[in-house]
Image 1 (cartoon, rainbow, N blue to C red):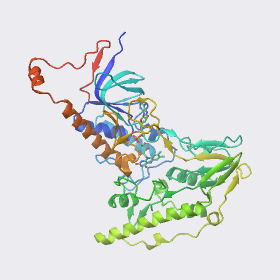
Image 2: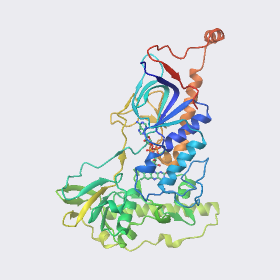
Image 3: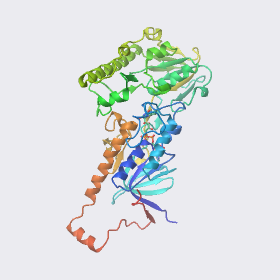
Length: 446
Ligand SMILES: Cc1cc2nc3c(=O)[nH]c(=O)nc-3n(C[C@H](O)[C@H](O)[C@H](O)COP(=O)(O)OP(=O)(O)OC[C@H]3O[C@@H](n4cnc5c(N)ncnc54)[C@H](O)[C@@H]3O)c2cc1C
């Protein structure tokens, strides 16, 4: 039996928010395309995160321009399931041509003819363009310092679901970005003793002078920043929409019972060593927090806005004991720690992408998502074009740029010289000459 090959102009791989945004812009520009998704639409939001997760930004902000969250106060924080439902609804609304349950296993450039051959769990596909929208957070990363400890269970934040899942005993959470902080806070509130290992971070105020930090980062141009400010490397951002949203304040967390420690340095058996940099990391986070208040005040003054002053936002709590007398070494077993949660981020996995679009480390080589392999695009990656690129409100704009690029390429490829135009009058061009497979044209799928 000949294998049926689907043909499509543009194949989008992945139907998270990036794939859905891509589909919208391709449809708007009239580009025939298909989105394939190995699970369900927005699966990462639905099942790959902890139970109590809510969006870090309010509903008015963490969404696409064309649709509001239905039945949700614009200032509320959507639950992870509401976010997943939102993208499912969005895909239905724009009539996105998405096939779920289709996993892409390999993408290869064709030789001697345009486009790519794609192997999927449901059969081969041929496409002229491939947009990789498989997500920025694919493979949980646990740093190599982690050591096996018989008495301690270790998991990545990607595996954490709720406090009931953990054994009795204390917990060490490594990493204090949004995930680590929110998980540590939840565990402490559930009655667990928690150690939180804090590295370099930014921590904007949840809100200041009646405006959420998402608004401030927007009007101050921070979401659209195309590169990290000179002299500052990109660090994790600690924010939370949990319990109606609150400012991540490490001193407050410590006063509530969490023991802060510096960056986790090494393990020797069950003894863990922390860098002596807790005070420095907290100070740097404070600096980032206060700088945003300053920038907000200056913006208000410059524009004569009538937003109520909030001097109390500048008052920092007294330093807790764990900050003034930091623990540098902890025997986890003696301290009763039974679980270590690594909230240490993710990497990508493009082992199936056999094209010239990756560098020696397997990282995408691209400019604003246009890769070094003509016809291959990436969307949804951190800093793809700007700070907001991996977030809901940023990916939509990057997707538009990529759709524009594909359309520009079409314009060139559709050019026909005088002799070809003459021929066009007498015969319609054949799409493909490969006779080994029976081909179902999807060129019209929209
Ligand atoms: C804990 C956490 C909280 C976050 N909170 C927020 C927030 O509040 N606000 C915000 O704006 N952003 C947030 N983000 C960042 C970002 O919005 C999400 O990570 C979002 O899921 C990224 O969307 P995406 O479409 O790029 O990738 P994903 O949602 O990961 O979607 C990629 C899709 O590709 C599919 N796929 C992968 N490989 C293949 C393959 N080979 N074949 C077929 N399909 C494939 C996957 O199944 C997946 O459905 C958060 C991230 C995390 C980790």
